[in-house]
Image (cartoon, rainbow, N blue to C red; front, side):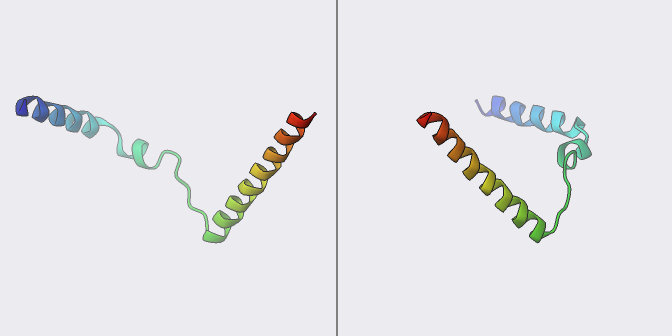
Length: 61
């Protein structure tokens, strides 16, 4: 059983070694300021509240 576990780890390591690192780590990464992040988070929360209110209105209608 131990041999099978070692083969699995080896296979995983070989396949991951062949994957382009930029593609894995930075494909869609951007950097924004903390204030921008907080503003976007609040905007998303407000939109979620609006969606919930609209869903309630549809249920009542």
